[in-house]
Image (cartoon, rainbow, N blue to C red; front, side, top):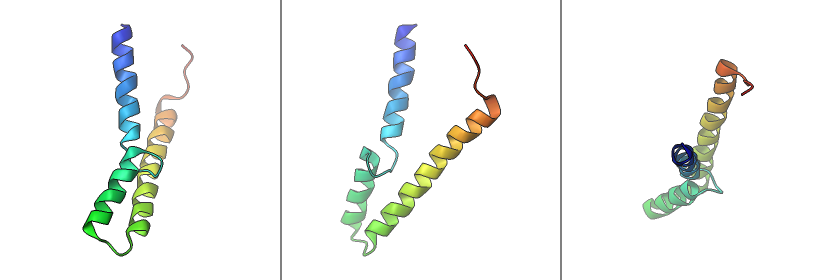
Length: 73
């Protein structure tokens, strides 16, 4: 049972880390891709992608709480 919960937790942490947000590894990956593609406005594109990813994450959390609420265990 412990292995199952650790597996679920570590996968969740990895998925959050791969989001294209500035402090995470996904943000650095997007920055590298934009620099390689030599976009002139790479910083603005990176910011738009980060805002979109943060919005999706926030909506996911918000809609989960609206659907299921906070239940006591």
